Length: 276
Image 1 (cartoon, one colour):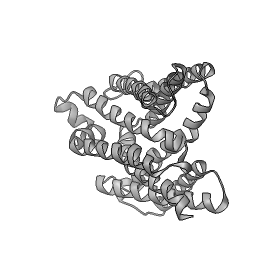
Image 2 (tube, one colour):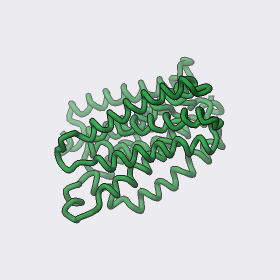
Image 3 (cartoon, helix red, strand yellow):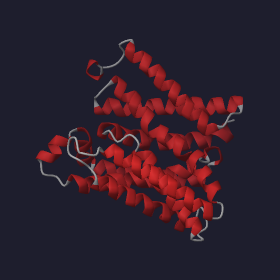
């Protein structure tokens, strides 16, 4: 069991570390489905690369996906509104997701292995992840992105959690939003081929949602998000091995059960009073 399940578990831990932290920003910004939208832009880039004759899993295919994701990041930064805009940004994010999904289906219909690529993007390939993939496609890029967020944490945290302060200080918020969403898109581009859209979205939103149930303190939010993500990933992988069930979908369901249990604990009074 250890030899088979250790690489997927390590991959989950690395993805949880970066996604659960970014998820805190996403929930604070109230742009919950930005992950799905950027992931679908990456999917559109992948199938477009296939249509252009680019080999799947190649460097060129990666840059196709990253380029389309960068377009999505630019759109989301550009459409940021202060307060209640005429069209909520979440609506823009949903429209981008739907249009990108439809375009990906159209392109996949003409691209070789297009429909297989869409399926792979949806469910991922976690159980077959290898140590070289973990080293070069998760650990290295996520370490660099983590350093990027550490260096700019004051800007990103203020804009996400206290946007009125950033506005009063005269910051170029759309400019900083672009860099935030671009870094977010790079994470998505590396994560989706391994975990799939469903699991990556779960890693992003559910641990952060659990954390917000119990506290509003930033350090506590981070620790709870990381801890709950690690627990759900471990339980999902163990149950997948024990009962011979599909790994990705089972991990997603495990996260859902853990969120429900966290909700019960919150109802019983567990957590900071300020989070009630």
